[in-house]
Length: 490
Image (cartoon, rainbow, N blue to C red):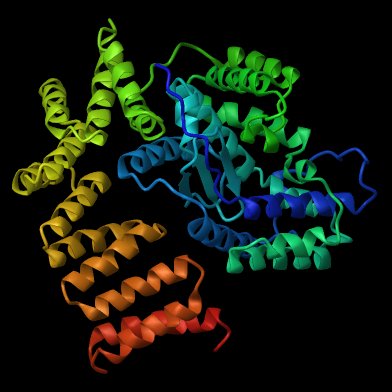
């Protein structure tokens, strides 16, 4: 199935440039073009230049910058799938801290990244270009390998003598960029260093080879087919050849050579025991994103219709689901409902079908039916993110602010790093006339956006509205104290 994605926008990425700029600049201080020394062992990383706390601080600034400046995909079905893949890989990843922050950038280009602070990001476009779940999983395993091997920190630790003061200065530039949401931090660094953007972005050859090797082991141990990695590399190489000077964004940070592809293919063949079938969910999520990035919904609808005759039952149902999503996006919920009801007759408990059908019912104004469908599904799947999220949307549209806030409060508690949930919670609390709840939710949103002063103001306003003897007053006061400490006020 072929779609033409919309390539008209690119999200803001200076913070990622700065992270790699830091490592490349420090590497250049020793005389620049010398060959890279052997990589230190993992056991020698403790107490290095970039401590766990510093990595966490950098990660917080990176995420604040992304939240303010990059378009994200907040689709719960896509987010839930990404979580399932990453946390299928994580048990086989040598990470000390396995709590990750996942982000989906709304961009149709191939890209993924992992940065200090246990942040793993992926472009929506990776789903378009990875034809199989094995290929998609290989990219995530590769990024987790970079994270687990602490390649960013290790590059710094190779420059122990000259790095500390320089690192502090460049990290200040990173913070400046994150706080202002502008290019000021980049300008502060670039004004003193004549390094090319390409060199700043690149991982070293040794790091890439290590990430390939470790990533293949992670992939295989998690039950994926390791042949997905060389297959994905070959897709990227084809794109690079087709685009000429405009190489895929992922390859600007992860240089790919024919020898690296051949090496990964050889290693994968040694590790592979059998072909692994994709989960059906991957192709459903991929269909959702194909619709999202289609320039013309009519073309997307025709493409999905053309694939309804597929002999493979899984491919046929994925095409039928994609057609339903495209029809819903094209303002034809009644036709979408017919397809979704057919899919549910064959697979009555698939959450993706249920949530999408509830969305179609909601579009038609059938809120009672949508609510009943989702409440029944939630009883079978307590705490499920997409189901709970859809119920919050339904109650919000029905004007039931208190009920919507209950659902969103649960989601925000379970996924506290998702700023969109806190913002929606603040709106629902306002509808329910819970002013204290509005201030508290807005404070959490402001914290995630990096605006601690605004968060402090929100918490003070919440504190003023709660009696001094109420238990909630103590909860708010403790959060306020923490924010004030981060601002250096205590």
